[in-house]
Length: 420
Image (cartoon, rainbow, N blue to C red; front, side, top):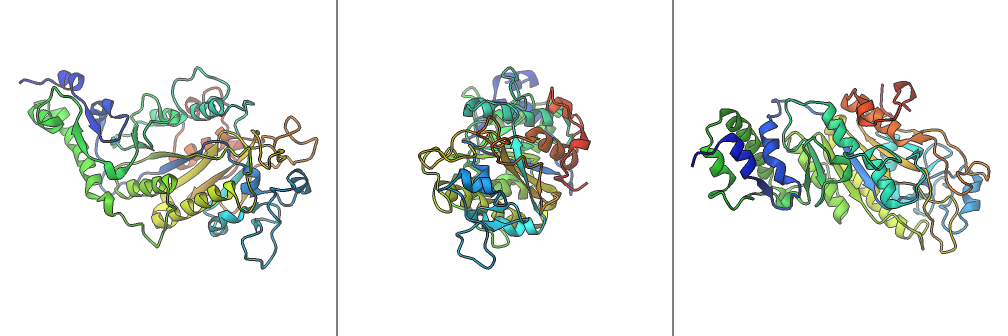
């Protein structure tokens, strides 16, 4: 059987067990080339908190009396020096404090490896989860016609000669909106299920057998490198992976996804962008205060980020992780001791390049005349300003107007979340 390069690309495919994006894998294989020996990549990890996290109870403005007036039953008590019973907020700077369930993040903040941006988010005013998530992942708030995601456009603006099929990976069964577009990206539900198999019943002996019959030297070269990258990941022995430096990830999907992102980074197979999400942040009823639904999720968040940082150790010098959520919650609690859909929120930024130990952004206040529409934390920092700084100063991307079309990006407006 004489298999041409065109027929090969048109008629065959490769699937990975659990990888939803792999029907187009062969195109990626042709375009792939190996990571240079000893080469280092800057890595960006994006965590999307779906459901709208309550940023006012995650990073508490305890220095503002209106916070306690608006939240009589769910407010977190002010920090008390010397009290270590995890029943009060953890002071950061004399005005802001962490929820006690985020205690493991306090050392990172003090070590200036963690920064916070408050009153940040999307300028769009929708209170729809679906629309708000779509706008943030597309990077074009208020515009539903955008076809690709901001992360994918960022990948498109930088042509990396040493790209592998694992340049952009999303942890999950489906490729998220942020990574959809022309640049190759894959969805990976579980590294432990990683294995190759033929996707086309027309091909006897699987992909490698067909590949071996190909006489096209260009395809042969790039394909071999792709197989080498895959083999590297398989040899990492996902079933027996042990985090380093005593790191302990929380159980559950979020913790295990973070662990597997760390594993992919250590496998040195060319990862540049990783995307993962966590759900359950929509607390209209019985949100809780020091204990409760929000507290449990924040505990997982804090444990997960702290474990990720500890596990990767010195590698964090080349890694930045950023969190985002579609919008915040109402400043006042509702009649069922929860919070409703709001506006501005807070973002966490962690990594070696981070100008940490600070709560960045302009605080708008929680007074009656300061709230957005009389009910929500007002927005003072567009999330695209934060992401633009990460892309420019950490990843080295220059075409920010392409990544965020219609948004005026000026480096002078950067908050200084990263070290200059």
